[in-house]
Image 1 (cartoon, each protein chain N blue to C red):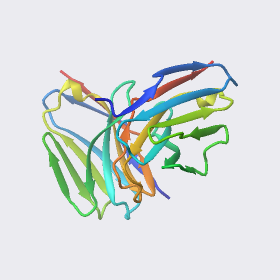
Image 2 (image 1 turned 60 degrees about the horizontal axis):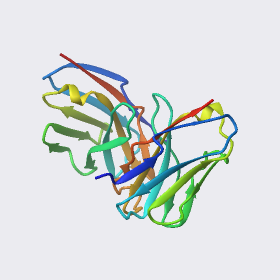
Image 3 (image 1 turned 30 degrees about the horizontal axis):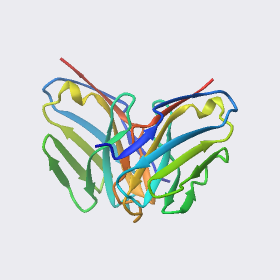
Image 4 (image 1 turned 30 degrees about the vertical axis):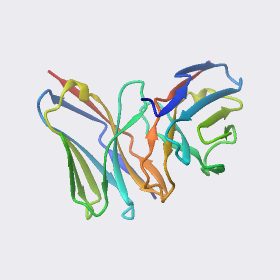
Length: 115
Length: 108
């Protein structure tokens, strides 16, 4: 049974056209994360939500925003995608946030192409 | 600063053992993880080890931790073609810090 679901799996957008990626979870976890993974690179944490508390990584560009309307859903908004934003975007969840030692469960990812 | 390093590529013959190595920098990491990523897919948690352990075995997987050298390894016994994937080592230090991944290729 899918536990962390990402839609769509593949997204194509135009340079500068806003795009939203979706993540949902059936685990009832408190924490939801968004990672960016460029080709042949390590996943890079963009931000996370602990419940409704938003935590942005210091080096995440302002172009990236997130919303978490309820426990189950979290969205990644890219306001003006550039060519450099083409990547795989991974959503993950964890039950608690205890020095990040709680195991994170990842979704299948959304591959974003920017034309 | 935080850094996790892995060799980028490993090729093994089907049925042999694979050993994927990783070094990390933060000695205060509580957990160390191995994730598997198949083509076009997300990350699948394979196994993890608590920092006060030296070894953990889970079926075909054996994790060895050398805290003194900050070295972590993943051994896959009887490697199969289905094990072909990218394997990420990660340490937990305020957040998960991933290595760049080791691409494992299994050939007949």
